[in-house]
Image 1: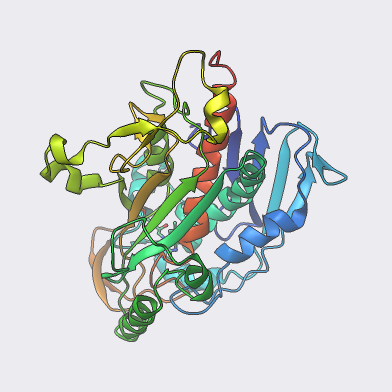
Image 2: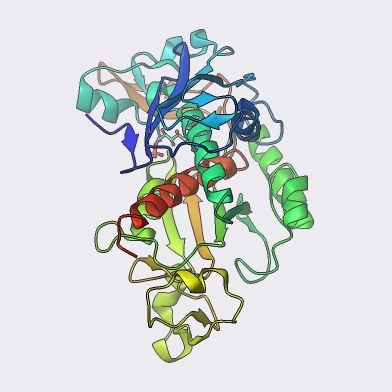
Length: 373
Ligand SMILES: Cc1cc2nc3c(=O)[nH]c(=O)nc-3n(C[C@H](O)[C@H](O)[C@H](O)COP(=O)(O)O)c2cc1C
């Protein structure tokens, strides 16, 4: 029953159901003295917020975080940080007809099979709404990373089957990614994908997407072999999100098709000005790599290269087109899902992937302090 907590030292619990009074998080283990304001958290919540137009749901939520504890005069106290985000704009009546139905692609039946009953309103705890607590916690973790010169770049690399052209993770146009509704770093692809998503909305359908991340400025040494490898922790974090069906690092699945002679990343002496070189153990030379096919880890430990990975989200399950399902009585029924929902997890998944990455990295940085280096 402890599935709502995450992390070892930087430990987060998220709470709340989609149509309950509130969602939020409690962070235990955040170091004292970090400069943090409610606005730092609110900024990221606005990026995740429903009602942003395009493929996002038009459920409108203010998502103003209330910090209940752990921050005093703009600095973290080292005590548990509790953040509350009230649910204001839910319309539970939209879900009245779903009390006894199992929606295709949703967690309705599996929750009942496990617990015997469920909060059917808006998907309860399996709703994308739960990720608001993660984003609030991630904003705190991001300030810890920023103080160590680590930045996260997260973007939509494909939506509705339309992908940003060119090699993954290279020549990313960050300004464009900030500008368009989908957070795609290529204007023409974003426009085509938005048009496709609009067409799907009209047809009562939905679409999948991939979200990519580059974590820049990571020192080497992060990751706890063997079960706490950096890539294993990131994959677990991503797969804990609803609708995620795959995670790949660097070349990912394509690496299974090539040979080691071509695909091994070859080491080079690192440039003299490499910031983390002074922190290496004695007699270990600083290295860099000609390529980053591995995506920034070797043996589950960060190499000092960017940590590059991509997360695949399945199409949003709630569609207004009629689908067949089964009710509690075992009868086949027809269902058309009303209510307000996303057409595609992008762009709202962008700050969510960023938050989960920040939580993993903050935790591994703190664990590294215990590694004896
Ligand atoms: C940020 C985010 C927003 C989501 N919004 C919706 C939504 O509006 N409608 C929907 O059907 N699913 C949405 N989902 C996905 C569901 O939560 C998820 O598919 C469902 O609970 C079943 O879980 P599974 O796909 O992981 O098996 C969202 C997921 C995320 C991460």
